[in-house]
Every structure is written in structure tokens, then in C-alpha cells.
Image 1 (cartoon, rainbow, N blue to C red):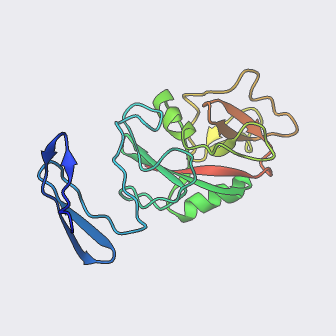
Image 2 (cartoon, rainbow, N blue to C red):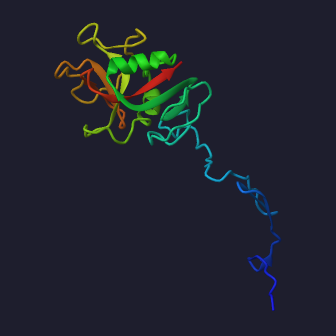
Image 3 (cartoon, one colour):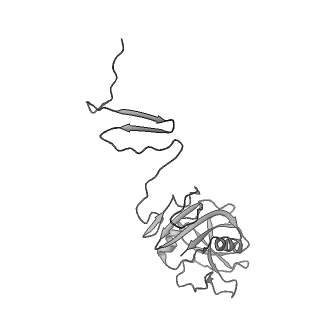
Length: 205
């Protein structure tokens, strides 16, 4: 003899109707819950609170520095990680390039290497830095400061002077002709040889 089946929750019977309108969607009629159908193989996420990217007022499109490709964030080009703050967008590219090549890659996208003019902006960008940057012990990404034109006088690729800095202790030290700036996940800056290869962060104002 067949026994009727019912869903039981908290000692109450809740009617549930399942619609299988296509192989990719499953809809559940449950008066106690709102469920949006999601195609099989896709993922959804809810945006975190402002500032999750590490800086006040930031709006990260994906988990910072996790390397997962993202969709556009407004008018931001697609990259490996994207964040928005104060009307600017920042895109991490995990491809490791020399500083000048990274600068040119940003320019080709209508962007520039990140110019960090406040602590809050520094926090947004540092959170995009990848967690791995072998063979370097401390993961770093290129930003847009260099003293290539005048030794010891760092300027941004936009021509602006550095009104804000976050140099690590003892930096910049120009060790081995280090003329180009990097940022670590901790937020500190260090000058590296421009011919080293790192990931890089582009910015659109």
C-alpha cells in the first residue's frame, strides 16, 4: 500500500509545489520563502556593505584579490577583480608585466595605473592585490608612481605630485635602481626595479 508523502516542518504541514519548466530551472512555491530561479552552473551573490574592499565608501564587485573574473562594474572594463569608490573604478589584472608595459596596458583601456591620493583610496586598492606573487614573499602589484624622470622625485603617471604616501619603513630606497612603485596587500608601498614583473591595478577617474 502506498503511503501519501508530505513535507513536515515544525510539526506543521506546508504545501510545496515544484515546477520543472525546463532542465535548467527549478521553482518552488512556498508561502514562507522567496526563491529566485538560478540557471544550473551559475552563481549569485549579494553585495557586501560599503567598505568591504578595505576602504570607506568602496563597492567591491567581487572578493578582493581572489582572481575570479568579474563582469563590468558600471563603466569599468572587465578584469580579475574590480572595485569602485568615490566615483573611480579600479581593476586588477593578475597578468604579471613590467611597469612600463602595465602602464601602456592601462592606457589602452582608457585608464591609468592607480594613483593613490588618500588613505581611503589606498585601502581600496590594497585589497585588490593578489594573495600570491611568486617568487616574491610579499605579494605586490604595480601602481602609477615612479621616479624615472628625476631620481628621488616620485610622481604619478598623471603628472601629479605625491600628496599622500604609504611607503614602508626605509622606502623608497632605490636599491638596485628601483624606480617604480608597488603596493602590498597590507597597503605599504615599496620601490622595485621597473623591469620586474607584477600584477597591476588600473584606475578610471
